[in-house]
Amino acid sequence: MTRHGTLDRVMAPPWLGILDDTIRACAAHDRSDLAERLLRRRARLLEPGRRVVVFGGAGQGKSQLVNALINAPVCAVGDDITTVVPAVVRHADEPTAAVVTGDARPALSGAVERAAAPIESVSAQANRLALVRDDVQHCEIGLPRTLLGAGLVLIDAPAVGDAHDSRTGRAMSVLADADAVLLVTDATAVLTALELDLLSQIHRLCPTVLVVVTKIDIVPRWRQVAEADRRALAEAGLPTTVVPVSSALRLAAARTEDHALNAESGFADLITQLRQHVLTDPVAVTSKAAAATSKLAVEQLIEPLRAEFDTVAATTDTAALADWHAAGRRVEQLQREAARWQTQLSDDVADLMADVEYDLRDRTRRVLREVDDYFEVADPAKVWDEFEDWMRAALTEIAEVNSDWLLERFEWIAARIARTVVPDAERLPSTLLRDLSAEHASALRKPNIEKFTPVQKMFVGLRGSYSGLLMSGLATTLAGLPLINPISLGAGAAFGARSVFEERGARLKRRQAIAKTSAQRHVDDFFLSYGKETKDAMRVIHRALRDRFAEVAQELREAATESAREIKRDLDAGAALRNGRAAEVRRGLEQLVALRGRIDALHVPKGLTA
Figure 1 (tube, rainbow, N blue to C red):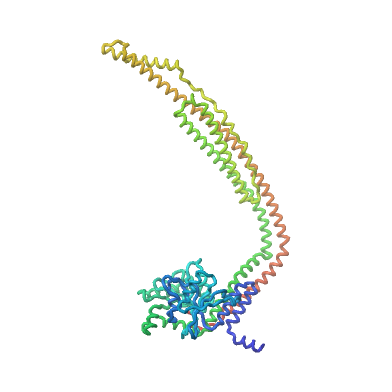
Figure 2 (tube, rainbow, N blue to C red):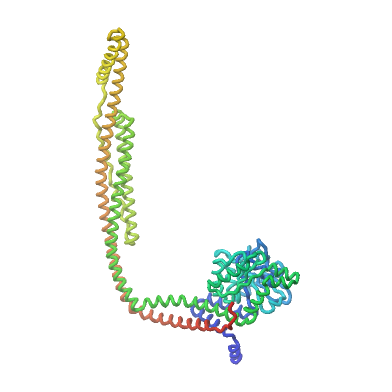
């Protein structure tokens, strides 16, 4: 057994030992997911035949390319058909086809089921079934073809779409098992940024890559597009060969056995490239694929270890001592923050005082505007009692609304300072302003309103009648009439009535002006007295908030001081543990870096890089 095991080790390719060491490293670093993925990759690499994944976006001609390569319509194609699950095409002595369902992981290989299907419709059947079932893995197709018999396994991968598309996830999972990749893009446009990004990711997963430009039969300027693709690949630093082809010409040439048309299709060059890069030295292709897979896994192991090492190194004795000093600085910072939040509190209260005063002034001015509008038409002598009740109610409402708003703003200020500066502070009781009363709105003094008595009306009417009688009588004497006649008497009566009417209107305007002035004086008195009481209340609440926050800030400073003491007590004990962990992580990093060096030094024959 020992002799046989030694022989196996001698005969085993170098990449197998490196891959096994990588799997053991994944298990040692508790990355069972990576180890399982590498075990699957190991099993794939040991299988006969090299897996070439045909990859690309929807509508680029992937499936038709596979059909043209093997000269058989095994992959579903059409304008309304998109590959959903992979189609695996390998060599078989007799044509066979099956839909594979279940869990395809190696650990659960017994759960896989294969259902036979017609070879010409197996791909379409698998795609339809995948739309209603989640356990459809892929479809398998076996054909007696020389290219496949040489060791080539073609895989038509699902189309790449949006990052959230489930097909994209399936396509990327297929790439994980690829030995070589054909990235398919049509000749209607140059390589997009998404395709270049995909190529960059593919090169990390699988270094053997070819770019196949399809549909050159329908694009007259396909040579310019292919050349632009080569320039874009060169600028991106991607060493990839570009092969223009036409699947339609290839299939037509196969039907008519037209060798010239087949050469024009570009497939002869594509098959040559596949033989050169994949089939000529499959061991080198396998070695490159194993090296890329191992390197990705090792990098995923190194990154968290390096981050942990940096963290541990940053918390050595010096770092722990810095933490202790930082705790002391935290105490000083809390002291500085105390001055900062006190300034903030003062600024907030000053802003609030200005806002409250403006609100009070705005509301009282609106009341005065209503008073002006009211006494433009109303007679104070008739409606004063009703107006007094309205004025009292309006000013009372102003006092209540203003005080409620003041309370809400103070509660908001307290919550903001407690949340940003003193997180453990409690909210103060919001009852300090509830005693603000509306007594200032209950002492509206009735102005001295001048009344227009009947006696005054009689004297005003006589004065106006005399003037009218005299002017009309003098005018009628010119016509030979006496001074007192019916015309002069009528004119006197009319002038007297007009004098009474004008005097009554003038006295109404004076009463309305007096009422407005009285209301203005009363509102100003309310503004002054209530504003003074509001400012006094704000000062009381300001002092209460300041004292409460100062108390909590003192408690925080004491807690920070005690925390600094605890850090100092734990400093010596923690230093030994950190140093031990740092040494352990360093050894792990050194082993992984050495393994990565072996991967980079893995021998790959020249001329096999695409």
